[in-house]
Length: 113
Length: 111
Image (tube, rainbow over all chains, first blue to last red; front, top):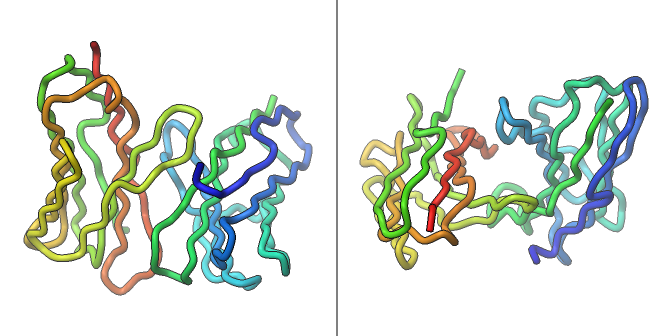
C-alpha cells in the first residue's frame, strides 16, 4: 500500500461525457502528479501540483483540467470524452517539489464507449 | 525532442535464467530511476541512480548507470516468477525537473 488513494478504480462512460477522478496523496506529501498510461504511449505525464499551485504541465489536453485543494487532495476532470481517452490514469505524490520518491496510487481505469 | 527508449519491449524467459533490459537516451540524465509495475497496480520505485558509472544492487537485481549518464541497464540473476511485471525506467534530463518515463519492458518469467 503506497498510501496514495485513487477513486474510482474503474469507470465506464460514453463519448462526449465528463468524468472526475479523485486522488488523496500520502499524508504529508505536498506534490501531486497525474499520469496517463495507455498501451501505445506508455506512462505520460499530464500535470503536477505543489501545495495547491500548478507547477508543471505535460501532455495534457485542453479538454482535461485538474486542481489541488487546500486539504491537498486533487481531482482530474476529463470532458468531451473520446474513445482515445480510454486509459489508466495514475496519481502519484511526493513530499518535495521535484525531489524524493514518487508514490503511485493503484490507478483509475477509464473506458470510453 | 528528448526520447527515452527501453529494450526489449517484451521478454519471456524460463525461471532461473538471467536477463538484462536497457534504457537509452541521446541526452544526459541528471538522475534515473527504475520502477516495477505489476498488473492492477501503480509503479513502485526500485532504485535511483545519479552518478555516472554507478552500480546498485537490490538482491538479485543489479542496476548500472552509464558513464556518460545517457543509458542504464537492469540485470536480473536467476529470474523467478515473482519478477514478472513491467519494468519502467524514468529519467530527469539535465536542466529539467520533470521525470519522463520510458514505455517499459514487459517481463514474463515462466515457472
